[in-house]
Image (cartoon, rainbow, N blue to C red; front, side, top):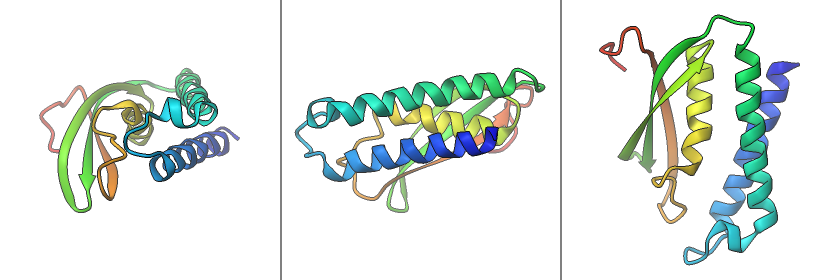
Length: 129
């Protein structure tokens, strides 16, 4: 049930963000365009954050450096690095991707915007990504 709940929250977050990216004019903030959806998106992000913290409380937790790359089409134009405590690299990547929704590089005016995350354990920070 925990994985299904996370997938549901993650899908809701993606749907709302994609709606705002597609429909909001470039010269209007998401908060002004549709404050209800933007507020709900923030609430879902908080639930994802709480879920990730609760899901790892019974597991062995490791600290990961997660590099989130931002793409316009096939071209990487920026990256952001997050330090995430999680039980798996995949969990760290999901959490970093959720956090990156609020990053300055997650700009709806960028054509074909996409993101990709790669996690590496902090105990081996020089490991190739």
